[in-house]
Image (cartoon, rainbow, N blue to C red; front, side):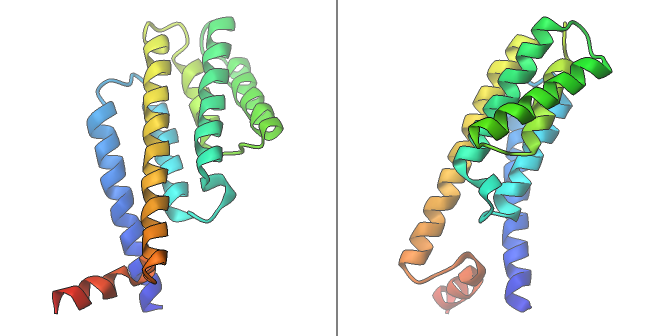
Length: 170
């Protein structure tokens, strides 16, 4: 029980740092708070369920790319935010994610964020910023997996990291 509390605290700290950094770097640039919310959901999956297939680099990057491309495409074809444009964006993103095997639920929010901003001057710039944020997510996942690999190579685990720091301090 105690170790699971430390795992939760470590993952919570990683989430806090990541979200704070994302909002600091991208919050003022992105015109869509929905897009930031979708990425926050991705961060939760990456740190909250790192073993999940949905947290794999392929699913995070692939799913978010599908969501961004699909949502941006729908926003170009159907002007304005309507129930139909939102439904088509999310349904199309879902279809393509399933067909490509890159299911990542937060990417549905990414697709909707583009139709929400449809017609705005920021849609194109949001698309490119989404690509930058997606690449940041993939870099984050690679760092997390590399750290996990290094810890396992040395016989350590994230859940026991606090013990390792305690040993080093003594």
